Amino acid sequence: MLRHIGRVFAGLLLFALAGCVVGGGPGGPSSDFIVISDFVVPEGTVHLDPSFGFSLYRGESGVPARQRAASIGRAVAFLVTDTVVERLRARGYDATSATTPTNSGYRALIVSGTFRAVDEGARRRVGNEHSAVIADVEIKATLANGSTQPVQRFSVDSRTAPPAPPQGAATGRETGVNADATRVGVEIARVVAEVARRNNWIPTTR
Image 1 (cartoon, one colour):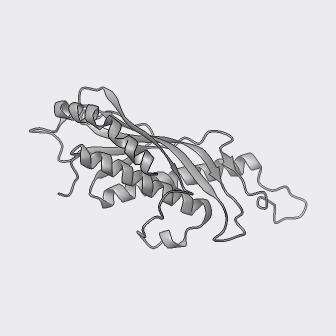
Image 2 (cartoon, one colour; image 1 turned 180 degrees about the vertical axis):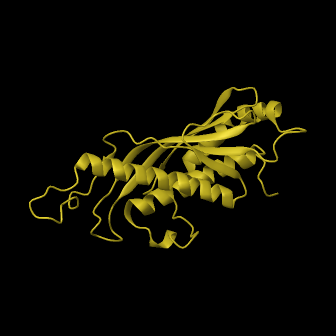
Image 3 (cartoon, one colour; image 1 turned 90 degrees about the vertical axis):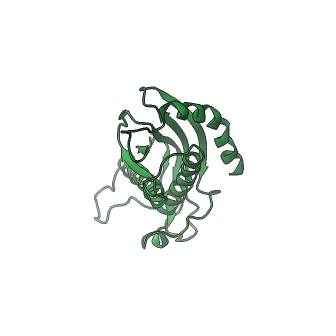
């Protein structure tokens, strides 16, 4: 994971130069924004636990695999996004989620991503599911002049990401892909916060 973080600094010089042009001035916002856009779940990314999906009613078929996969993909995407927003806010940043981020005229970091894998593993083996969530993430900066500048690309794999520090009552109860999604979200938030800090992104709390 250190090599992923090492890549963060490759785009910092260019981004820092851009920040000199678009930094907040008189009449500007009290904080700079961080927007987390919806993560994309490509078809075929979700790997279902084959032991689930049956019907409780004899003679009726269970939920179609495609429908189950779509539902799981949406849930994991929501949990990753929600976790990133929550953790960034805890660090004092003005973070929000948006389906289609737009340039508000102020500088903002836009975080987007695509899932490479969402694997349910074996949910019956609670605590030993061998599930996984892997996401490719991109950070861009939207500038006050309306342009967008790439900042950093990196990948996060729940199997190698650090354990998520407790925050909120629900975190300790999550298992399987829910726990994986939380772990991925926490790691994404950590990288984004590091990029923001090194580029003098203005938090709401100083």
